[in-house]
Length: 196
Image (cartoon, rainbow, N blue to C red; front, side, top):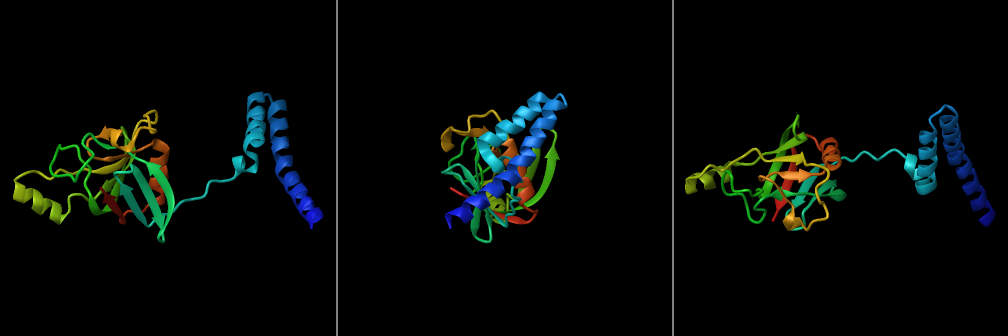
């Protein structure tokens, strides 16, 4: 049994290593020494996983947990991805009115999207809904709107505690690569739940 496993591993190494070595040698001979070295270094560090295609994530539901500072993508009830997020300058509590710096809480829909020249990909959250508008009307205030999932500058300190990530005016901000993954994973009409 050990011999069979050893043979399979040996065959797998030949299948994976041979193309990597060929690419590294060809790149080095062709004058792209850095490329050859990069390919070889990536293989040496990460093995075949360095060259494996990234799985495409699909999600049918989005959950944002404000207290933990995370956005979760769900597919058929299973969490398939998790991203750190930032909020407005007053992250605690539900959005009450325009300009309060809060992110709304409740169940909404990701209803449309756009590529912004300033923020890159952005997906709109269907806030305010009828209940939000009625509450604001009763208080005599504007409920606000324009709540989006959008990218933020990549060099922000994502290791900050969630309650210190106050980088928007009420939107939900993600790192650029994370936002691109969310953009590709969800369709217009996907439900989003924003929890306190």
